[in-house]
Image 1: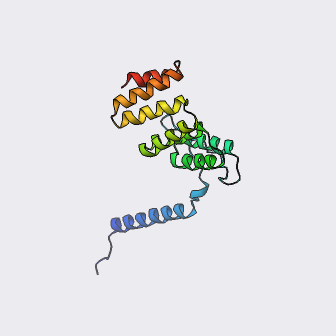
Image 2: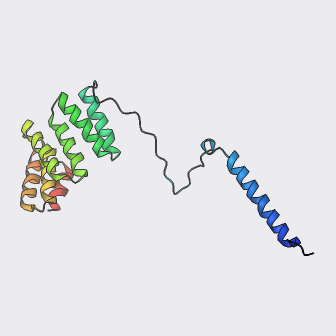
Length: 171
């Protein structure tokens, strides 16, 4: 009578079964949620946890503006816009409109950015930052003559502003 399995194939099959059983057992007992994170390597960046957001309702305008500034610094422009709008609903200032416009600029929403800078200038016709940023909007639209005019007006108000000089030179 012939054998069903030869000794080498039986040993290989048994070895495979043992390895699979041990692997499955290791996976079943491994608690993935409890693993210790590895230390960051030189190429990994460590991201600090963000502080909790303040509520949009019930917070003061300066606190909402500050939260918007933090979010804009984290490149969370849509969230920053929400906080700037909430701050402006409580108290309008040209600087807040300028910051709102900056968030729109980073999102390349030039029409909304221009509206925000225009509102800043309605509140304060001498808001040099808004004039400079309107120049940038015009430059992005390739209206270089208008951009240069805005930059020159901004420089007339703040001749020491290096950024304004740089922007004018780039037109």
